Image 1 (cartoon, rainbow, N blue to C red):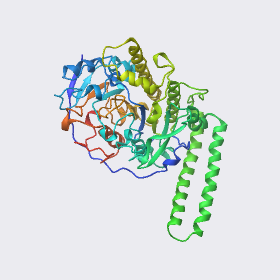
Image 2 (cartoon, rainbow, N blue to C red):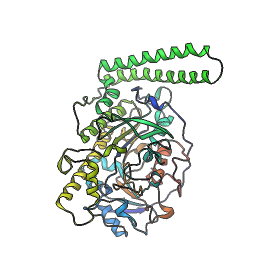
Image 3 (spheres, rainbow, N blue to C red):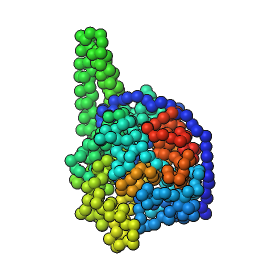
Image 4 (cartoon, rainbow, N blue to C red):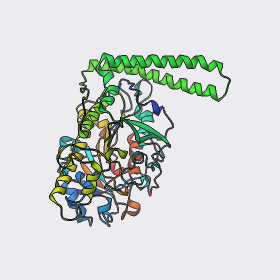
Length: 498
């Protein structure tokens, strides 16, 4: 039986964003051993679906029934649910506070194979992020709640913020040597590294590795072979040379900015050397722990195969303690345009053109369009299942030195990088959350529907509110502001806080 609640909660304050970090060095695979700590471990994984997805794939049977009963638009299988179709009154003009729907999430087409993970998941509907601009993609805007202008980010993204927090990365001997891992899948095999999803600040884009082989070499290879370990040792020797050079140069410089720059450089090298030492410890620990490592991906992989390989790499990185933050981009930025998924109605044609056909089906559906929609929904279901494979691995692993499983200490987010629709106005960002029960995220197999941007008025909430929740109380911090969005209420979505 469906249970629907309306809930409200108090506002929470937040702390200022931390500054800086050695973002450009984030590709170096440096590792440290997870150790028992008084504070709980906190991990975050974001899977960004390029050009968005049909929000109806996240809607349980109970949610699909509730929306028209509340005065919202009927959810139709032959029309993509999004801000163009759903506006206004996507969820009903009378909605003035969040609705919590307790319905079986596995009745949603995209969540049918979640199994037991459904009870540790939540679907969130109704959040906007118009500050990002929408369109085909919001690029860095999704995770920064700012607008990317001429390809340049206007603010830091949430992954970078989280990776700088001592409560997430740890301190001293418990500090992870890599702040965040950023991997992805791009339609072009020539775009092995791109800079269009993450940033450390205005104008400071961060790299994403789009080669599944290169990502494996960087993050799994050192754990898997003597050759990989030798690469770590070789990097250590290079860093030691850099340290000696800085030590030799500094005394010869007059007091002033030049000497200060060398001192900053030397401090960065010292930090990397410490991380290298911890990486060596992890190599030894991983080999004695029995952790099963995935085989190196080989050959040319179809997009969904690449995604699964990247998720396998991220899973190992989290469980070995390589990092506590990961971003996985599936055709983010301009990367979605040329995908040939290689099956069914999606084979032999470019992704961008096919999405136009999908979005155009507002009349009587044709057989060809039905096939197209079926296969796109398969793509989105398999994206979700790729992220769920990480969640399953974490659920099967006890939390080192803590209670519950590693999934209970990890928040996984599946969200479209431009919200909903093909040409989006960023008015709706449907998303899926998994895990996090031991660090304050309340999921419970629920769907939370927020009053939408068209009719919700002051009760409407934005994607920024969720980032405030993750970067604030879920991360064990106080966060006062994030991004450039103007919020009616800066509360970090108390409906999701346990």
